[in-house]
Image 1: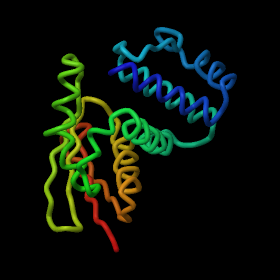
Image 2: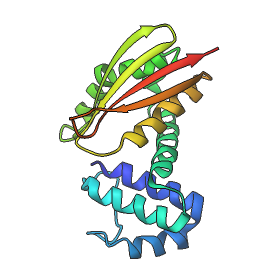
Image 3: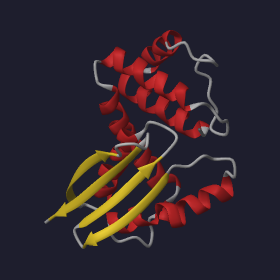
Image 4: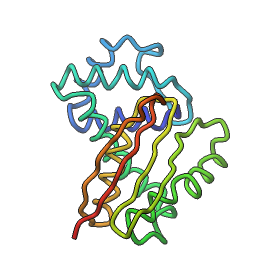
Length: 180
């Protein structure tokens, strides 16, 4: 997993809990590299999960809630650092539909070794989109946070339901329905 994700998770934690708390939590998290991450490094997702669990124990927030909050944080990061992905999109659905066919194509050019999740979308109507998230990593709640933040970015209201795939691990269908 790309180091930028780890760096941004720690920035979010510092923003929420303070630098000293982050240092204390990382000391207790039993990480392979003691919490030293670079944006260009590659690290196992299991380390990210350890960090989320450690901050869950510190804060009392569930790991799922923290993943959702991190999804919101990362959407703000993407908007700031990659505005070209948003400039010609007029709706959340347009952006979500572009993840695999546009955004991940560009990410692969920058990071050929990146193991990206797969996002298959199907638009059922102007107000209903299904998105299937498939990944080797257990980050479906992070994905939900990204979808929520995407709706907020386009000033759209909506509901998101999640249905885990009955047999495929780390595969979830998100049904997104926008409301007026």
